[in-house]
Image 1 (cartoon, rainbow, N blue to C red):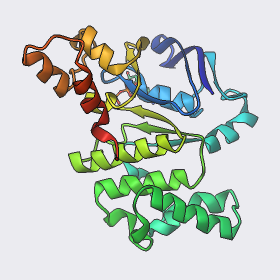
Image 2: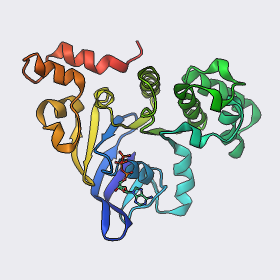
Image 3: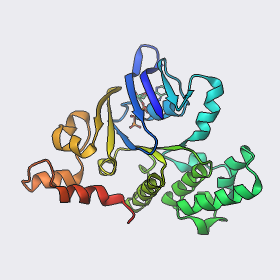
Length: 266
Ligand SMILES: Nc1ncnc2c1ncn2[C@@H]1O[C@H](COP(=O)(O)OP(=O)(O)OP(=O)(O)O)[C@@H](O)[C@H]1O
């Protein structure tokens, strides 16, 4: 579905940011991307959505290529991007208008627009806030409105670029649950995060280190077998606790299950 073919990228010539990145994300996957500050995670998100283009190699979404201008518009419609700070994205004065804005731009018929509005707000548990002023909501609610605006556009894939990083634990938990609910409904989800606890809820983790992919696989397996500190990552609390208790890795099945189900909604 989404493929990076030997992608190289720099902002300034002679200062490579990403080197020879190749991977594929299949429809319906939930993938987390982790790495130290400045390792290139947000740049990968921008490359996925065609906001920046590879200097070498290609980024393809289904049969479309981000470097072909005619394909880009469709790619923007099919891939939604949620950023760290939802306030940067708000342009209207009510939650309802915020969600309808994108739909009006692509001229969705009125009746369908209302269906999409209600579905999107229901998906983020904000049905009762149609008339609320986005800037007056809590951090977590603001982020949920930003997500609703994207869901309303019916994308095939949503990228969350550190979308939980400004939130308190409760807000983070709500956004994580929404991501997993969307995934259960068939959405392809990419989640870029600094929180290793969040990474554990995915089946696949892509670690970017100094602009190169260093690991692509089960996140728990990574923390059980690799020295996380070598990549400026802190092993998740549950894994550290398990090891402190003198238990040997790999973790027992019941611990794995408990750690993985942390953000699930049922
Ligand atoms: N617009 C830009 N112009 C020039 N350099 C940039 C630009 N955006 C990012 N960079 C540089 O590219 C490198 C990768 O940045 P990027 O934001 O992709 O990393 P990141 O892994 O998302 O970092 P963080 O975890 O701190 O958000 C960094 O060295 C950064 O300073």
